[in-house]
Amino acid sequence: MPQIDSLFVTRLYRAALKEQGKPIDPAELENSCLVIAEDDEAGQRWCAEVGYPGYTSYASLTDLPWRFPIFADLKDALDAHVAAFAEDLEFDLDGRELKLEDLWINILPEGGTHASHIHPHSVISGTTYVAMPEGASALKLEDPRSGRMMAAPARKKNARRELQTFIYMKPAVGEVLLWESWLRHEVPMNMSDDERISVSFNYAWA
Ligand SMILES: [Fe+2]
View 1 (cartoon, rainbow, N blue to C red):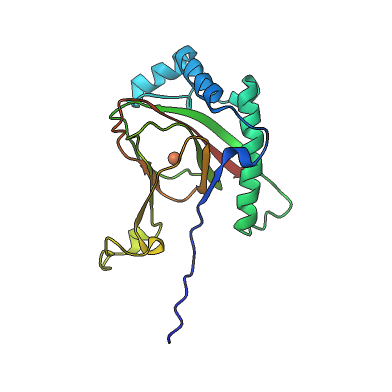
View 2: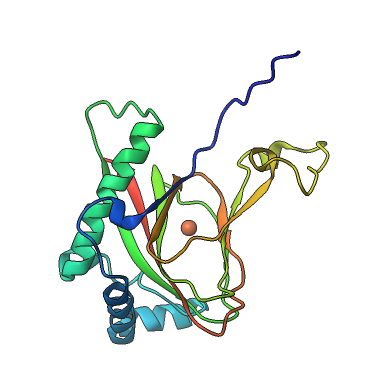
């Protein structure tokens, strides 16, 4: 029998948010996101100007964990999740830490999408899911080597998961996903009538 190994593995972290830190009430987090969005006129203006579907606090509110206690609790939980993932990744952090750099709310209405992107200048990025109505889109992750695969055949539809070029994650409310920030991802169109609400974040090597 030949020996065939998997090399250069891409890790993806998935956990219930409540596995770390103080429990966060999902209904309270959802309500906080909606109230903040409602009050954030600068953010609403920014979204309208750049044609962002729905709402993001990304450009307007840079201090959610310092303004709102529930986001302070969220930061504490995320710090612990990210530390656990960094451990799994066997990063040599050379005595420094991974620190929260940005944390922002996303509210994606019916028909909204978020095109393929990476998160430059960060080490770990992720999202925690606040409202995921039936039919709300998954998170689509792309094989980071796909730009090099000029003459490679496509993979079979039912190929083993670790060999697939695109992976669709369908996280539940209260879950957190983490990945390395260079991993290309997108949010396909929200086919639900209801809003898809999530909180995303970046951790940098401080
Ligand atoms: Fe992203």
